[in-house]
Amino acid sequence: MAKRLQIPVFHMEAGNRCYDDRVPEEVNRRVIDHSSDILMPYTTRSAENLVREGIGRDRIYVIGNPIYEVIRQYWNMTCRFDLLAEMNLDRHRYFLATMHRAENVDDPVRLRAIIEAFAALAETYEMPVVYPMHPRTRSRIAEFDIVIDPTRIRVTPPLSLFPFMTLERNAFCVVTDSGTVQEECCLFQTPNVTVRDVTERPETIECGSNILAGVGRDDILRCVDVAVSNRRWQPPAEYLNEHVSETVTRIVTGYHRGMMA
Image (cartoon, rainbow, N blue to C red):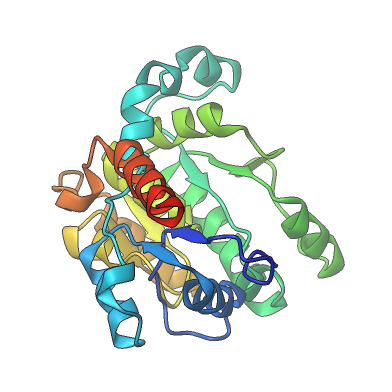
C-alpha cells in the first residue's frame, strides 16, 4: 500500500532468510525486501542475501542488531528479581519455553512432540518449564486434545517485554521457535535451543549460543544437554552495535533530505 501511495519504504531486519517456504514469514520477507526503497539488514550475511537476489548495493545499509542497544538502555528493567520470587523461581533453576510459529503449532504431530519434550526436560533436570503461551498455541492444544502436566510445565499468559527478558536472562536454558529470542539469549549468555528445522539467525549457531534441534523429543533433549554445557561465547560483532538508532535516523533523514533537494 505504501508503494502504491508513493511513500518511501525502509525495511529494518532486511535480508533475513531461512530458505524454507513452509514458513509464512519467509514469503513476507521477500515481498517486503523487494518492495522497499532502502534496506537495513542487521548483518553482512543478510546484506549478501539481498545482493544475491538482485537488489542493488546502493539501497542496502548494514546497521547492526538493535537489541543490544535496547538491553543496555533498559538493563535494570531486566533485573526483576521480585518477579522470580513472585513466580517461586530460582535463578538458573528453570527452563523458559516459547512457541508460536505456524509450522509448529498448526501441526499436531510437531506440537505434541515439542510439548512432550518440555515435560521430559522438566523431569530430566528436575526443574520447571515456564511457558508463556501464545493464544494461537493455546487454541491448538485444545483442538488437538494435548494434555499438559502442570507439575512440570507452568503455563502463563503472554508476558510483556521486560518481565519476559527477566526470565530469559535468568533461565537455565531457553527453548524457543522465536527468532528474536535467539538474538536476546545470545546477548544474555543464556543457552538457547531452537525447535525448528531452519533459522534466519545462523550467526547465533556459529558463535555457539544456539543449537537448531528440530522438533523430535529426543533430539531436543540431546541438544539441551549440549547447549547447557557451553555457557560462554562471544556474540557476533554486528550484535554489539551501540548506535543502531542513530544510524537509522541518519539514513532516514538523509534520504528525506535527498528527496527534498
